[in-house]
Image (cartoon, rainbow, N blue to C red; front, side):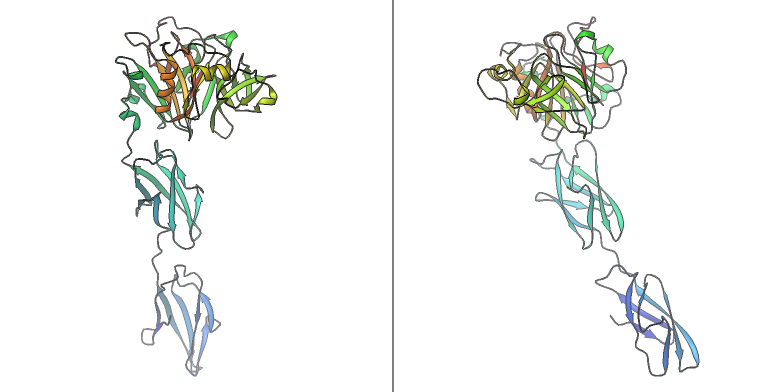
Length: 426
């Protein structure tokens, strides 16, 4: 690019550099007329910062010095992100540093994977995998360009809550102030039967799980268990059909009396539901067996599992998206407590999706509500999108409090039944 020199105004003017956005170090070569000497810059080829006017001093015919102002049109810095997509769906990149995609059927709201068209020299700083959970809050993307970290807000529009289509009603507002990632729903048609009441708390992956209680030797009511108020959601554990596995802060609070489904949260915050059993006070996870006679769990058959927090249930009812049968329970757990298709009870359960969204369920068996069977409960949890789910208490004891407010009515009211623990979330 050649500059325009105006000897009257004493200016040297470059136009806009088309392929350069950083003018802090531009190499400029000066060609002098005979008899004139360049004084400043010192060299005929010099590197200068054209973001600001540069003084060019020339000795004219060895007599007088003249100063020229050398400038350039500062080019517009292009946006770091030129385009964005989720799959084949184009997202809008706004001047307000926002990226907005319109949700469509088939998109996984809790695992929205973006692809970006970046300007040359821009790089993604976080998250590196460009994956966002956009159900509960907006995402944050940081792109580095020209040495600057540029934050973007990632949004989704037109998301359709599938629970509403399944006949559940969002009743979150009835339970006081909750984190954005906790929502509460109610149905009066659990299992497809009229006046069959149930609640579910839908909890995002950012939640922290707690195991609150002292075990089978120090059973407490849900009101006692929630007295510390450290958590927003408290779901009862098991009364006394088994001894539940319980772990808190990485330590075993109570070993279990038999293998059953266990929900655990690891140190990195991720969730897992697996068949679990404590041997010598250490928890082991065991694989699912599709059929066959029950075999007692041993160290050799399992793999060590050391979750930060864990709670065992009465039964595993959903595994890898499959509703488990009474025969599956017999093969893997050696017990089929209340597992018949005709065993209608109020039940409590917890399940997790592929991307660590949690569903805590509590049904009712009073005022004309007759509860659900285990296969029906497993199907409900599957319909929520859960991959695995376990059942806790059944019959008259199931209870879930949210912000110390009752959800489903308990048949033991006002004299609540004591349980070994509560699985809690905040």
